[in-house]
Length: 218
Image (tube, rainbow, N blue to C red):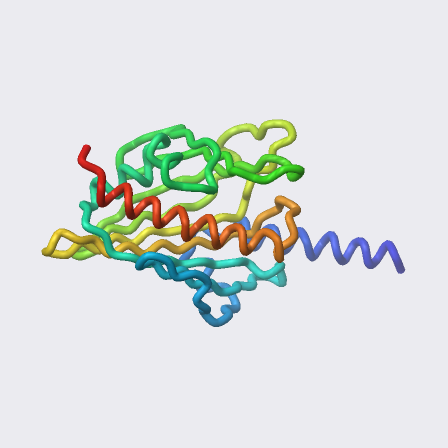
């Protein structure tokens, strides 16, 4: 009986992983998921951060966050701050180190090491970013590519992290930014500890990003 239970649990975990592995982007994740209601998590200096829970293939609930704000800047300058490692490390409080592995203009691959508190092990993410443009919007879709590089010993690599940026420029020189991210982390930090930290780091990071973009002259 115990062996049957172990077999069932192992097979269920395999099916869940296979389902998550097949998700190629945030839109697909949202289409497949059971979705909770959006709730305001943070509101600071003109930036609103909302959150909800997603559930796919009987997994633990995935935290999805979305933030929106309007800034005086250009689309090119915003993309620079979202792409270049030095810029990212200046505004993103969750990032300990950022590296641009490949750069093909509108498509790039990045390696991110996260600022994870002790005693939890270090955590990293390798992502593929792609820029697409419509008549009135620039979209950056990001998905994980965990097998792009061999993992380091003792470092946890995120496999399930999808995000997207929407940049909508206006004639008055402002850009409306919407960022959405959903992730299922394996870091081992309990959710009641981790989620408030994540929300705080995101809202503080977006305040920094907004300030840097509006004050950036080069």
